[in-house]
Length: 135
Image (cartoon, rainbow, N blue to C red; front, side, top):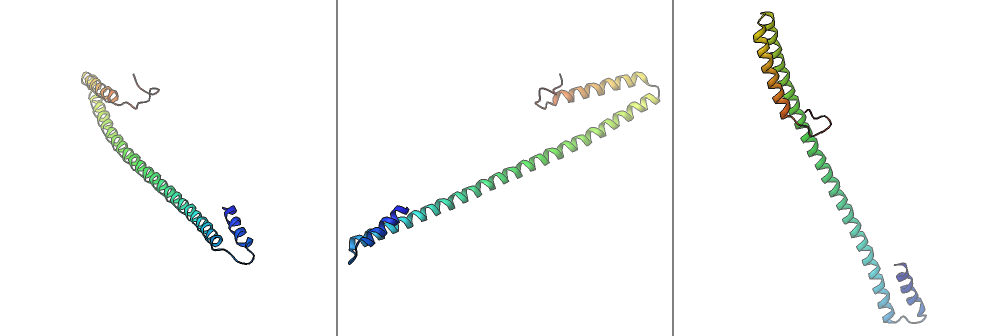
C-alpha cells in the first residue's frame, strides 16, 4: 500500500516540466486502489465487530435461558421437598399415634408400607451419577 503511494508520487515527480496524462491517470488509479483498500479494511473491521456482537448476544441469551431452566428446576425441587416434608410429618404423626395407643402390630404394618413406598420412590430417582447411585 505504501509502495503504491510512493510509486504514484515518483511518477508525478519524474516529469519535471509537463506531467503526462498517462502518469496522472496511473496516479489517480493507484490512489483509488489505495482508497478502495482502506474501505475494504474498514468494512471487514465493521463486519467483524458486528459478528462479535452477535456472538456475545447469543451467548448472553443462552446463559439467560440456562439460568431460567435452572431456576425452574430449583423451584420444582423445592416444591417436591416441601411435599416430601409434609408427607413425612404425616407419617411420623400417624406412627406416633399408633405407638401411643400401643397398637404395635398396626404400627409394624404401617411402617412396612411406608418403607416400601419410600423404596419405590428412591428406585425411580436416578441422578445419572454412578458414584452416588443407590443399588
